[in-house]
Every structure is written in structure tokens, then in C-alpha cells.
Image (cartoon, rainbow, N blue to C red; front, side):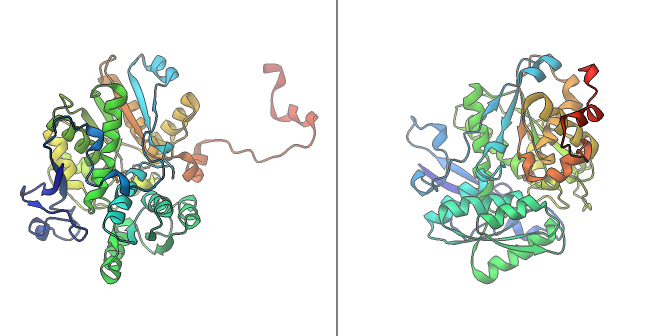
Length: 398
Ligand SMILES: *Cc1c(COP(=O)(O)O)cnc(C)c1O
């Protein structure tokens, strides 16, 4: 099998090399505060017809680090199925990845790519998860990771990255500021940049979730709900199904819901107006808090082409969805991880009851317990004696 980069704008193809991130021609058109232009996708040229889709990756198996990424479970949550009368409702739980988030799919691919090309240093910007993920996968792969992230990222994510041994550089600013600094730094020291959407291997790694969903369901689902910030997961989900259809394994692309936080909704806005406007994002779901979505144009183009839909949810709806998911299924997601479920709750009455629906859970709730604490009663007392229990629990009503 052969593979090449193809520019999603001009269709020109390029050899895959570590220094090429965007189409050198199309990327010139990008203005400040605008999503990336000239994103490169991997195109495969297959001679052997017996090829199976799980081998559709641009790096050979032997280069992947020995850490079990992907193959995450597809839950069949009985309580929710009954509650909504939707027997084909599924949750793809990517919080089950080694570092607790979907980002491991991209980090795993980037690490393999680095190893194949004898690169030992990787730099990236992150809202938290991409960084802790690259740090963890990098630890398994023996790579040096430098991470730029907003100084107010959830503490657990910073601790996680430090535990794995990454060099962590807090940025006095938001993700967009960290993004710029990381690009400058990789230029100075010549490290491979893993920034989401910018490095083509990120979309290529993320597409594996679609292969797994397709394998687990034995078909393409009707709907997939994707929590969206930069739009790179969304583009990855599309890429997986595009590959499956293009090479004859699947017969359709699912309808994809791009679910965004109400105040971090650049892609949803552009879906309506056709234009990207710089926003000042603000949401409790830190992992999808983005001003200028890197994969914005790419995501938008595919949403339009494949009849995708956009919905936004308020922070309160995210927190309530998070709680409902926890107490009905046993799956505790971080706020961004519960955002697809929040979008589903808003949209479910518009879906056919029999439809095969998958929501992506992208990150673990243990990564940000401070947010989850906002709508639970955290006990502010402690007891010593069993007699004291009466003050707390109404025993007669039990
Ligand atoms: C990164 C992330 C997302 C969003 O992915 P984008 O590619 O930025 O759209 C959603 N949920 C979690 C938990 C994430 O870490």
C-alpha cells in the first residue's frame, strides 16, 4: 500500500514528510484569527484488494509504542435505552483510553510517526487533554514532550502531564495563545509539532474511532454526536467513514451532530452564516473552549457536504447531562466528554426511535472534579458515632 498527503482545498498530493504540515500553496491564504487553510489528509493507493480497513494507517504497525490505545468499549446503556425508548442507543467510551481521553488516538499516531522518522522531541499546545495524552503516550514511546497550556487548565490534567515526565510550560493566556507559542518553539528547536488539526497525523489517528464503531456495530450508525472545539475529532470521525466508503467497506456516511458549548460555538455560527468570526470562548467544558477552531473550515465543509448538523448547549445543560450520564450508566465523563450527551438530550425527540445512535464520550470525569462538584452536594460534615447518623439521614423514610 502507498499513501500520500492530499490538500483538501486544491487536491494536490505530496510525499509524507515530517516537515510538511499544511499545503504550502493554500496555507498562504490564511489570515490572522482564521481557521487553518490547506489541511492535508492522507490518501491511500491500494493494489491488494484483500486489504482490511484496520490497516489503513500511514505508519506501519511496528512503529507504534506498546501502550493499548483505542479498542474502547461501545456501551449499551440499558437504563437510558428504556428511558428514551431507543433500543439502538450506544455510547462509545473513549475515556477508557490509557490517559483518559480520546486524544490518545492522535498522540499514538503522532508518536508512531515520530519513531518511524527518528524524531525524539515533540511539542504541542493543549487545553489539557492533548498535552496529558501526548505526555503519557510519549512516556511509553520514550519521547521528549514539551507542552504549552493555559495556566488555568484543570489541575489534574497538568499533574497528569508532569507525572508522565513531560516538560510543562504554563501560558498566561488561553489555548489560542499557547498554540502560537508552541509553533514558535517547535521552529526554534526543530521538534515535531503535534498541534491538533495542524499535524495531519492527528486527524488520521482520530479516524480510528470510526473504524471501531463500524466494526462493533457491523454497520454505519445513523447518527453520531461529537463534542466539538477545534473540529479535529469531527474531521477524524468523517475521515474514518470517508475511507470506509471510498474503499468499498461501508455504504454510507452517518449524519454527524457537531455539539458545541453555547459560548464556544465558532463552527456552529459559521454553519449558519458561512463565515468564521473570532469569538471569546467561555465554557466550563475546557476541552472544547476554542476561539478560532483549527479545523474549522474543514469541519464546516464536511458538515455541509454530508448533511451534518450543529447544535449548541449551555453550560448548565452540560453539567446536568454529565450528572444524568453518571447516575444512569456509571460512566463519569468530564464536561466536554458529556457534551455530546447533552446535545443528544436536546435533539432526541427529533430522531427516529429505532435509529442507531452513537454518542462519543471523550474524556474522564476524574480529570476535572471541580466542575462536576458544582451541581452535587459535597458533604461538609463528618461523623464519629453511629448515633449521629439520624441527624443526617431520615431513617424512618428508608
Ligand atoms: C479535545 C477534546 C474534544 C474536542 O475535540 P476537537 O478536535 O477540539 O473538536 C472533546 N472532548 C474532549 C474530552 C477533548 O479532550
